[in-house]
Image 1 (cartoon, helix red, strand yellow):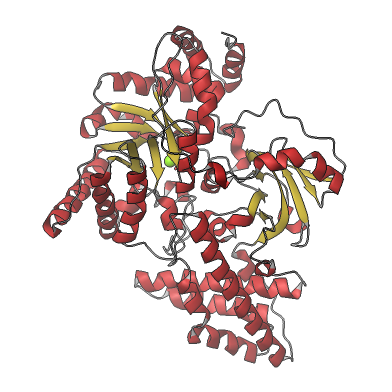
Image 2: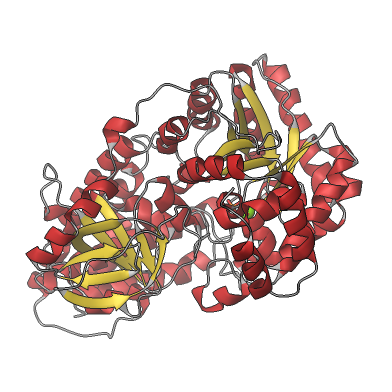
Length: 598
Ligand code: PEP
Ligand code: MG
């Protein structure tokens, strides 16, 4: 499993607590904290309807739940603002006003008056709102259903926690640092961002993949994450503590003190250290191989909180800034000014170093809570990435205007995700032109950045030579390219054996991309999927012809050291041998035999 860190020298201490489960580590590290169990919205549907005579008691429970939810929303908003620059104080107030909404409260009251218990009334209210909202044509109003459901889910959580005698999450004092481990069946990015991030030390889930956006976000925040732990959310309560060893892939329930003592050093070094996050931007330190081939290293940035780690790794250039998180953490679309403010800070902080801003890549495993996705059967094949932008020209214009305005503050390149053919390119380029025209008409300064496309659909790769004249650069998104090449869900652990970075088909394709790009020497090619930070594949990627790598900042130091050990001719020789194989196992054997003792 590629985790972005080389942990082969690590061995876990012998167990003396309850070795509870094993799983697959997605983000390395060791952590210990109290369980915070996060439910999905199935909770609203799965209620067995029950009745009660005690109307007054149920009303009292509702009032208490409203107070609980309000407090937890306020706490979340405060903490998100502190942890994430992408956030601002506008994230949660809409939920708070919904909590007081007379229509919502009257609907719950109606079902309580029919004699239902509070959980049953919440479930019925959810079903009835759903039915009503489905009739509405207006998209904005339809989107409000998701907010209503979200608030009902939060009320349900609060009610159930209170009924079980659990300590409500917000009741953990805000000013102590009670560490928390998030426990969920599958954790969606928006759920993760609603959690008390400052205290989140780890994540453990029943399911989740290494390139899911929750994993990417967890990696960005350096929060250890363990998945493939069966039925974990059913086996713990919020009174339990859990120790995650995301090096060895182990998890211990209520660990004894002597086990914690054995892990003390690992727990300390895994802890996120705010103090080290203030170094000034360095001069880029891109390495060369033994024979002098320069390899450009850049950082993938999902959150501003990663920028100091990038600078700490000796790199200033951002090869991929994923814009989605400023959208994911809000309850409505941020306006042009908000987007501009967030992007401008990144560009300005890069002090002239190149920043590749990727236009919004929403959908797939990153649905927005305020957009109705109509239960797509195949979200990764659906309304995501560029398709979302092209079918929302109004939104695209706002988004593009915000990006184009930031170009005046630094060295920005604009990258489009999920391009699948010439039509996509033509349409998005004309939207860029329209955004420029409107800025000009409004007298607002803007820049004309180089425009690039991500290579993540097989159709774009197959028509690369015809598409390249229409862009300034290309960036290979191997996370999705592998997903679409093999028709294998990148986030589904059950089919992970079909999702192989080290597959000869993938490596041959990368070589072919490099050959096509060589016909356009003035255009840059970069690789920015997780594969770019895969240490063992580095010689093969260099052998294939890649020279620009953008990766998770944590992977940079090890990649830089390895580049300096390599000889290009040997990498090319390795690559040729790989091209003659058929299976990932054969590739693995060749990689293991590759000389690294140079
Ligand atoms: C990719 O698909 O490789 C990529 C870099 O984009 P994302 O992981 O954000 O989909
Ligand atoms: Mg992608």
